Image (cartoon, rainbow, N blue to C red; front, side, top):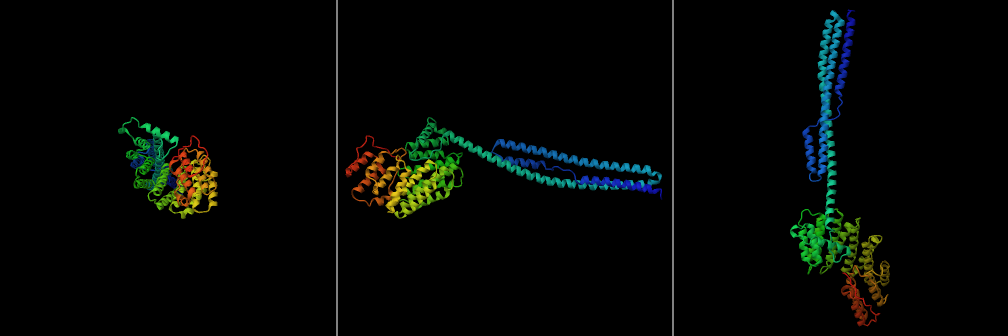
Amino acid sequence: MKHFAPLVALLLLTLTSLNSALTSAETELQQPKVNSSWIQQDRIELEKRLVLLEANQQNPDKIDQLSQSLIHAEISLTKIDENLSKQVSQQNERIGDISAQVDRFGVITAWIGGGFAVLFTFLAVAFAISVRSSALAEARNTALEHIQEQAEALREQTIEELEKEKAIILKQIKREASQILNNIQQDGEAAVGELIQLKDHYTPEEEHEIQKQKERTIDKPEADYTAEDWFNKAISDYTNQDFKQTIQSLDRALGYPENSDSFIATTLFNKAFCYGKLSPPEESLEVETLQNLIKQFKENTEEDVQTTVARALLNLGFSYSSSSPPQTDKAIAACKQLIERFETSTYEDIQAVVAAALVNLGVAYSQKSPAQAGEAIATYKRLIDQFKSSSNEEIQNIVVSALCSKAEISLLIGDLEQTHSFINEALDALQKGKPQYPVMQLLLFIINKAPITAVISAIKNVDFYGGLFWSFDEIRYYLSRFEGEKKQQINAFVDFFENHQDVDKLEQELEAIGERLPARSKHNTLTFFG
């Protein structure tokens, strides 16, 4: 038995070494180094088609770029699959090496044991083969299960990452496509000129732009007209005082599906304005068109469209207040809607519209009833406090108008000292050449704080370019209480400001009343613009 002891020890050593090798192989197989996943090629193709479909008609360059990205993804995933297959092959080779070690151990055992150890060697080899087969099967199954689990996890992770990347790329494409489209629209509008909104009078710069737009359609057949051509023709029709034809041209301009929101909003605004210029005015169509414009673009966030919507609300309120009879409550509601919606806007053009709405709201209050003069004054004060620091010239002019309106309406309160204070506040903000300056001098004359000659002098020293429209409707009841010569003089001034704006005629009327005036100059006829 003691001769068998070394052999048994050697056999045990051999089996221990074999078991260690098998354990090492199994450990390596159970924890393969997997760096990526198996993702079916048809899934990748589906993802690619989905992204391309969603990005369609947005930006061709981006679509090509996205396609190249997905192609690179396919190549990478193919390489991943090849690497995984290579790892499994290497594991199989490792298992083969283990088998070779078992064979070598069997040979060594046979050499040492000689004839006496044949039985033990046979049992050891048989046992090793059995263990090898079992270890191979278990190790391979464990490795494959582990690899498949990791591959599935990586597959889900990769798909999720691709989905995120797809969403990011799509968002970027849409954002850039939107910017490109906006630039194209801006370039197109720049090519045809500014979208002019119709009004009663224009600055020299605006008149120059109108003339340029009129020239663009000269000698061009109507069959070749674009939407912009019809818009330009409408401007030309308007300057020719052909308001019906203006409306027809604007309708033709609206008939193009590629029109931008800005173009449509401006065209509808002009159409509504022309309804109010017809004789007699089509007030119901004007109101309906303005309401449709406001409703259609109430959710639009573009600055120029918002500005047009604000101006539509402003004109809607003015249309209500100037209707016959005035719909004062509706005018007040429209002004309040505009102010509430746009008061916090940071766009200067919209701020100017809000300021104008506050003026109109004050007028509407005083128009509704002399008893609401206090609300009108409070509205004017609100406007002045809110916008007095603005550097915008248009807004500053509106602030000055509010100061003048506040002074005028204060006559209805009956506190002449307060009125005098308000007039002086307005005069401090006015330059002598401003059209409102002689109106304030007239108010001073009305409350016996200035002579009639001061009013005449102020009228003659005004630069009337840019015009003056001043109605005394709000205080007409107050003015009707005067009697005699003072009443006749006030009526002559009111007639001058509201109707004829002829200084010669005014002076003749005042002299007929009995007022001795300074000698007239040769150029006393001045033109006011309504």
